[in-house]
Image 1 (spheres, rainbow, N blue to C red):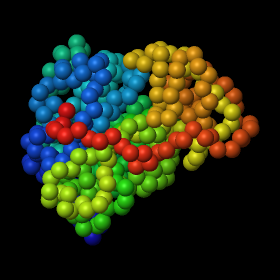
Image 2: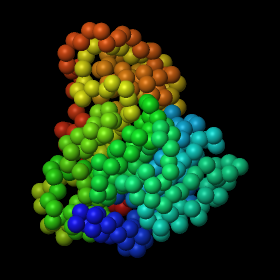
Image 3: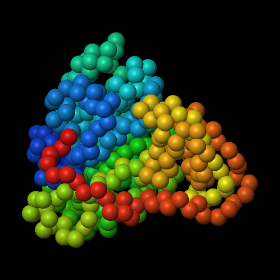
Length: 356
């Protein structure tokens, strides 16, 4: 019975994104939209993306982290390829991007413009590959374990039925110290079963949204470190039928980053550790934020938790930091007010209007 429900849901998602939606203008809510204005350097890249690829963008955040040169990247639920092509520009000709999606119509658009974007970015050949597959069954795609520096996803995991399987595959495919950087839709409570059966609510990224505490548990159960919140935004839901169906459930889009670390802890602990940002990160030469709370200014000695220390030590960001201290003395809770819940503070109000 469970498999038949899963198959039905996958078919409905494929139909919604392959047939019902011709472009982002057809969406009924802002759930699958990004309202935040991109930084200037990113806008230049976006301007080079083919208009048809742009028109079929259904993301809910900016999933472009820092220090991308030369990385091997996996885009889960790449759709028509907007984020994949943006990343292909930023990783450089020596980097590479693999996009995975289960909707043939979306992939047809993405594949159509490989040569277009290679030429636009001045590459001899495309550094992007698109694979048809289900992100819940990545083991079927012959992707090598530990072969990706970065995995991104933009408003897609909520559409998966077996979300735990996605996070387990992420843990398997990431290199040690690798990062998952992704945006998705979350709810302030578990979604009633009857809403999950609504194809429009599911396709609009609402009724498949995870209760945020369940998301935290799934990620850590998969062996990933505690997710770090970067940004969140309240969803603007104005369609009367949708409002009536969802009742008092609150939804927001949020961007998290999570790392594949050795010996991470479930809470933020204090060992008297310190970090000094050397500067030098592209687009953040003087000041850089790991997440909403961990903010670093060049040359300033900054206290960090054990988990933050591990991220800075084991990830690609290690070359930008001097780290001081060890784990010999535990001093108790690290009191820096790290709040992983996107509902812990009032999220930004979504702007009205269409998708970017």
